Length: 263
Image (cartoon, rainbow, N blue to C red; front, top):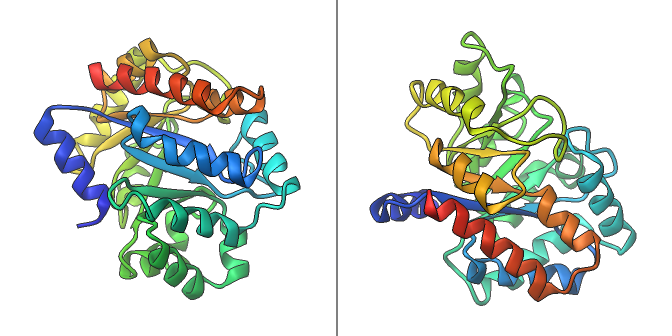
């Protein structure tokens, strides 16, 4: 079992839904980003999604695009993102970390080297949004062999014909994208999400976590009530972009986490 598997088992035993927080590694700079990441578990975060900054993030809206640009401008690299995970693990060996991003930086480093390094620093899973199931031999299958979960996205346009292909080789959890489009673009609706989550859960035993369009504790609660948990990224990243102090960012995260945990 990975840390992700253990986390979901523990939450299920407690009758709780998961709260997942996304932050861009290195935004606005390495030190501030590390301070935020270290503070997330204390703010109620069950799983951390750590963004890998990349120059061409085609699935992301302006908020996360700009976060990646800020991180890259501040000198963030894939190595520094791995270093950040290693620093986090010095004081927290239980909170799962999922690295989220695009294949190019991983390919450039070399898949085998990346997977060995990621495992060594305590990464638990990967979300690589530009690798479809048809390319599983590239990264997904090697990642699973290395002991990392490979988490796939399902979307409102993933129909019943496509869904089995998406679920094949997926592990850890399924990330359901609540809206059609890019991150931060629209508000999620529990009424829309609920039937889609049920459709996915009929085809898999994996937890289904819902992200995109969640900005408030009430929406976090509503979405988590019809799924196994909620993910918030753009709303947190926007707080960082606005220069809010780290304690304020973590207070905002705490409210979102409490919303999901009330579901």
